View 1 (cartoon, rainbow, N blue to C red):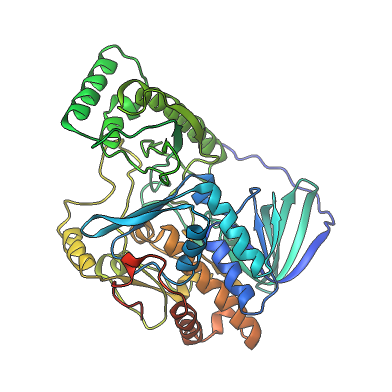
View 2: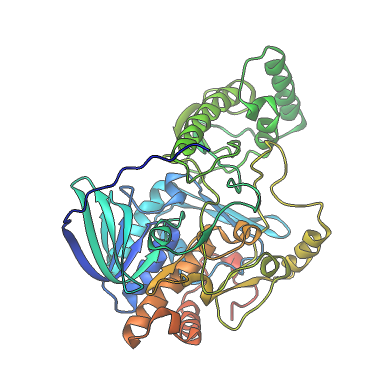
Length: 472
């Protein structure tokens, strides 16, 4: 066994940059929603964000999809955000792609603007280019965090902290137990480097039989000439995705955002491994962009516009809470009285050991039964305890690192579900401060009732959703 070497960091005094009621760490869909509702309910709120913009994975990973099965998971703050996106012209109208799937797309640049407007209106403070580097724990409660900034290390103090980092960074630093992987491997799912092709022109009626024939012949020619080395092309995955003309951005952008990439067996918490994944993902993007330009109709004059700032990570730490969203909760659509969010998306398990395997267990009879219930508008509940960190007072968690089992997290990691758990966490933080009650002792019904009131006041953002089952 290799000896792990270490270095003892000397103790030092660090400046306190500020003191707040609620500190939200991470400015993605969950963090922005948490900050928005904590502020609306009277708290003095700061968001700490490692990048120079808000939006999280939607922007930095180009994860611009709007995905839902029946719209039941489009709750409250999601509609508010979409209303702003519509006003700014940054959302492709949603539509049913299948009988039980709703899809749309966002302009990632407009996402930044939309969150800036919403949080500025709520008077939320922001700190960009600050990385969470530790937790300040006293008598079993979190009182703030340490951050690394361009000016050096500093402290931020708060009465309530919400971990919305996606990787559960604050929870881990605070000593909250956490899980990772599928029970066998640390890599739970494959990672994906998304990219955009510019100057794309979609042919009329694409894909016709002629278009498909040309693409298939192009792949055969490319393989025969050994033009490419990436498994994304040599496995044939590139053709399957190209056939769908996958994930066009809003119509005014003559661009394409192919979801071809899979980087396998990545431990997202290993700094060397995630570095390897970033480089491998970019190499995939370059080769696939060339393949599209040579062999996919409409891409003859395209160019690689950009690759995502960060590789897309679907799962890393899952913090342990007072309750856990179990695999059976998600598979069997369990309901709970202390529900603070709802989900219904597929069990979306992108395999970490295959370039071509379907991410959903379509051959499983249990899953086929689930689809039948999904079509009828069924859903599962996420309990209040899933966002309350175990063992550390005053610490909440929202987004993809909530307390959930592996299969359950694969469904609950979508942006609108992250927004719902974020809205719940921000609301709970503000209510607990107002009542002077620790989060662990807060009556969940108070949070549930406040969320019901707040969400009922928001009109659906799309006409398609007006006739969907009530969220009540």
